[in-house]
Amino acid sequence: MVGATHEVEYEQMLLSRHTYLNQKGGRRKDGVLERSAYILLSRIRLQGPMSIGELSDAFGLDTSTLNRQTAAVMRAGFVERIADPDGGMARKFRITETGARVLDEEREGIVRSLDRVMAEWPEEDIAAFAAYLKRFNTDIERLAGRPWPRL
Image (cartoon, rainbow, N blue to C red; front, side, top):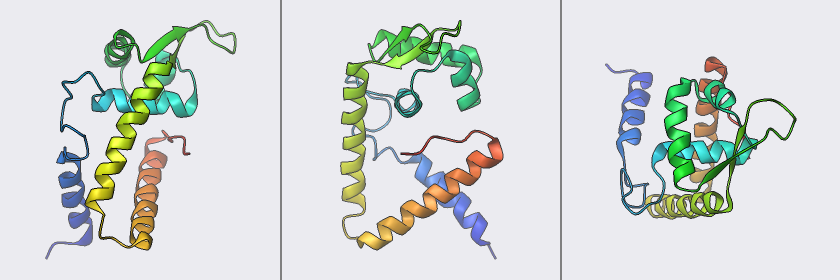
């Protein structure tokens, strides 16, 4: 008999493979956001300007990976490098107006997709699902020591 935790593992695996929530599915060819850019821009938007070191700590990724990701979003014009507003030595990445607009467009597309997926769900079921996802994510973040800022 398979336990409930096995069912969570299986369903989480299936959820992570769905590209339906990305408007075009998978890697975008139309110059909009890839998953890593979407997550990076979302974090900078919530937390404010961040250095490579801060991004490395936040994501648990090595600086070479983040250098590649930030270079890609800089080339696209979605972030810019600025002097540390707090006077520190490290330069920081700040989301641009273009980056904010593209992030908002991408997020709205995903919300529209979610609305289609859950079109027949009662509002209280959607709220309960959101609460369980938040609880699941915050517990992962607590164990990893990398909390994500919340809205």
